[in-house]
Amino acid sequence: MSTTKATTIYLDYAATTPVDPRVAEVMIECLRPEGAHGNPSSMGHDFGRRARALVEKARQQVAAAIGARPESIIWTSGATESDNLAIFGVARFHADRGRHVITARTEHKAVLDAFKQLEKEGFEVTWLKPGSDGIVRPEQVREALRPDTQLVSIMHVNNETGVIQDVAAIGAICRERGVAFHVDAAQSAGKLPLNVEAMNIDLLSLTAHKSYGPKGIGVLYVRRKPPLGLRPLFYGGGQEAGLRSGTLPTHQIVGMGEAFEIGERDRESDVARISALRDRLWEGLSALGGVELNGSPTERVSGVLNVCFHGVEGESLRFALRDIAVSSGSACASGSDEASYVLRALGRSDQLAQSSIRFSLGRFTTADEIDRAIASVTREVNRLRTLSPVSKQSG
Image (tube, rainbow, N blue to C red; front, side):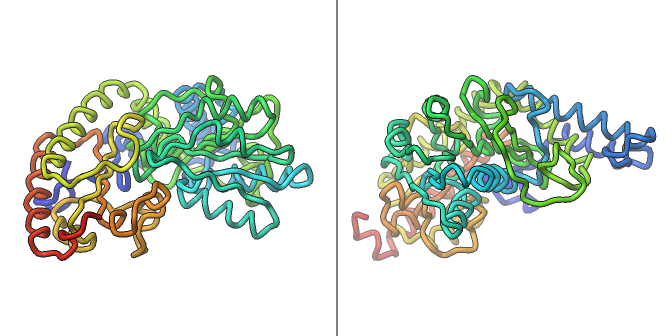
């Protein structure tokens, strides 16, 4: 699938996933003149009841995709809000019992910045450093736990490298010690099996737009039994069990429900096709020489390939590849000129981190796009290596 420019090769699905036409269709039905325009909280008339029925159907669809009960699903504006609600909600609610929390240095900014804010509020944060493969070992979590630990937050799939964490093993450790466990699963929904019960997850953040749904809608799964204790971020009409006040956007919720149902139904076929394309891309890029994979070669999702190119200057490389929609890191930090904090946490030098490119493939990626990307990267890297003094360095 191409962007508005016919010449652009679209390989940035991790940052901007297009809406599946099947999802758009059910959303549009809600927006038509005869659609469900009522407030889902207004149950005194048919307009509200129609909207409520659609909201509850979507709640069931999302719950089914993650092995949860529908009443555990709380609608939010996206994974960033879900992350914040989980982290601040648990930490502040239980602050009188302990002020120690744990996370990893490679988490999404929505998690990192929330933990930095907790530090300002007097909490003590243990920042776990992953290995060079990007993996946080469960034993690192076990060793970091203390009697006053209230929360552990470890993401399932890293948004820059695609590395998968063993959240089930970490969840078992947290459950054994009675510590709340939060997982940001924005990048794994529809790509890996998710079951919050089997994985011992207490809080799970999801977003629609990483699963071919609309932007601006997400979910926080909250374990109900035994109850966690969660303080809301803001107050109002008391919607979503009092945890997330505000009028529910029916059309976006319907879109997320449909996207998650499709994603779970098509997951195995999607993953098989995308994995083959990713391997084709890696084979073509590695033939250049002086190319390294960032993160684990095995524990990673099918759709993300993060590669560093020795002998080229990063900014020049990204400019040269402007015909390919790729990224140097997270879209949430794209305004920064600094090297990726995720890659630096893996031990990459600033130079190699800046000379790294994230290719992310998706449901609509074609073999033709892969072949065109290989040709373009090969041409430009070879050209830049002949021009750049960086090429004389080993990195």
